[in-house]
Each structure stands twice: as structure tokens, then as C-alpha cells.
Length: 236
Image 1 (cartoon, rainbow, N blue to C red):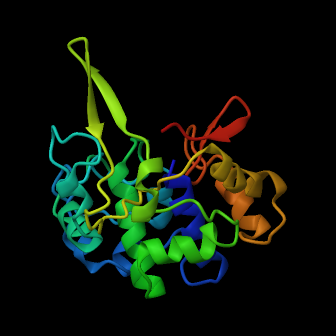
Image 2: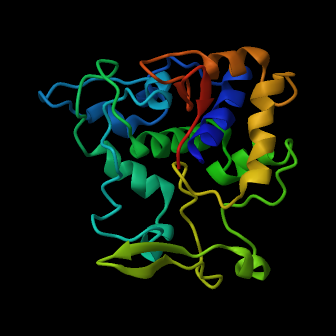
């Protein structure tokens, strides 16, 4: 459930006037100025398109190879600039804004844009602007080695047998904070993040930013949040 956190951190830059939702992404990331759409034409997508899954970007970054199990170690050691460079070389699936198609790639592009604008790493920015102010002190992109025993293993069933597809390796140097799903956390911590939207007190995000995130921007989507049955949320 990292995507809404990523978008919220980006919205602090909107609050400060450093970026605008309708800015073309290629203004900040020039590697996208040569990207082509499905018809071979170039189309510029905006920050809002990234946040609403309407950018046309591929669902998964090209450097995340098919068949890799959850949190594959080679994936965890990639870097955001390299991942986004590969995304920029892929073709858009459709003209931006013309349809909704869930895209993990969009969050990597947004995370990299945040780095360029702020001069901080994506993970540092999220910690400084969202996690620390909300008191989410037990939420990490890289769990401390001493806490390794608290990190859940992830299992899946294959042909009737359960197998572990992820066990946290405290010796692995994680460089990929993964803006689409890189946070290690748990419900009691995430409640603090959710409460920010219910209170809308303007302490971390402006009231305007919260309203914008919870307003339908594309069918079924606000900014970073899935909107359904009168509420907001995100599966994951």
C-alpha cells in the first residue's frame, strides 16, 4: 500500500509550488521527450496522469523480469534512475488520459521526478515529509538488521505445496525503495496515514491536497487512492 504514500509525498511538493499536477513529466525528466506512443507519435503525460493510472505507461518496469518471485533480490538492488531510464525506452500503451490502466511503472517515474525536484532521494523525502510527521517510526523501506526477525515471510501455493517466495535478508543492500510497493509496515502504523485523510487538519498535507487526492480524477480513481462505495482505499 505504498502508492498512496508516494502520491502524498509528491503532493507536499505541490503544496510548496515546486510542481503542478498538470506539469508535463518530461519537463523534469528529459528522457521521456523521445518516448513514443502506440502509433509512433510522441505524447507528453502529466504528473496527474501518473497519479491516476492514465499515463499510458507499461504496467511493470521493464527491468523487473517476468517470472521473478516477490521481492527478488536482484530487483531490490536496482536503482531508481536505471529503472526509470528503461521505462522511458518503452512505448506508451495508449494516448495519455484516454483510458485507465493500472501502472506500477507510473509510481517509479513519480518517485524519480520527486528526487529531481527535491534534491533528496525518494526514500528520504517520504520519511521526512510523511513518515516522521505522522509518527510512523516503525515503517521502513529498509528494515533495520536488528528487526529482521519481525519481517514476515511471504508464501504462495504452487501445485498444492506451500513455498516461501520472500524472506528478508538483512545482509542484502536494498537500493530499490520501490515507490510502487517498497514499504515494510503493518496496519497499526498505516492507520496513522489513513487518519490524516479523515482528519484533514492541514498539518502534513494541505486541506486542498487531501481533497484533491480524494476527488474522482478518472473513473474509480482519485490521486493515488481507489475510490469505491463512497470510500477510499487501496488493495495490496
